[in-house]
Image: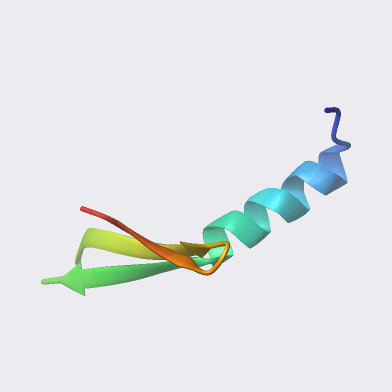
Length: 43
């Protein structure tokens, strides 16, 4: 699959925009993002 630069940027913007970061003492300790209605948690 080939993407144009603008298409790739929109994809990355959507992907990173879906993440929910958790902060502790101003440090990013984990984040959650949603894909296909499923929540994924990353430590």
